[in-house]
Length: 120
Image (cartoon, rainbow, N blue to C red):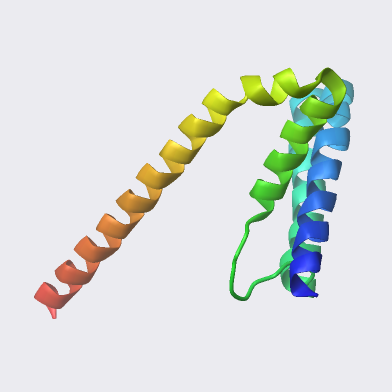
């Protein structure tokens, strides 16, 4: 049941971001974007993480994955499968950036742990 909650929680976040955020920006400019970010992401984070719709045990998935999938699939549904194919280079670079960021975070943790041991 928790996995279903994860799917639904991230899908709802993705639908709100993809359908509402742009409308706020069009109507109110950058202030509308900031408000939409606070209102949408804040509310969905509260529901997904604090209330517990989102699966925080085992296979952890961030809301950003659901938002990204919703955005990609919205393009596919609106423009056809070619939109999904055209997004693959961006997806590859994003995955590469995530891997590099994860490795950098790991190296930083190891460095700080060694530095803490040396100072103790």
